[in-house]
Length: 160
Image (cartoon, rainbow, N blue to C red):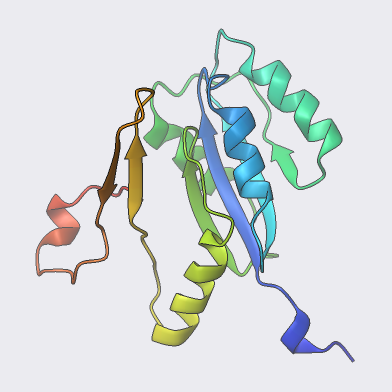
């Protein structure tokens, strides 16, 4: 019998990419380094011209937790690319689904904290605070953890 206390939650991370070579190497490393969870990254690449498809295919051959959907489609925006992931991926083997923009860098405990918060609160969804950063070293923390108001679902960005 499996000791359920030692089973890590299985998280499907949906990643929509487009001309992402400036960010993808560091971003994938940050997601693959998550602690306390079992991560699989599902990638959909919008037709790119910077080598993203070839690079992601090569990385997937080295990393079993990286699953790349077939290339060739042109989505024209992140929303349609994410919808493609939701349409084409079977999430039956996962406990959670998470979304990642191609330029995200995640703290190593991001998904573990999300899991713990969802377990503790019984919430159906989770959105984290983010730190925006620029090449010149500027950083700004964007608070997303404030209590939700009646019409936030209409006016707040889907964001983090």
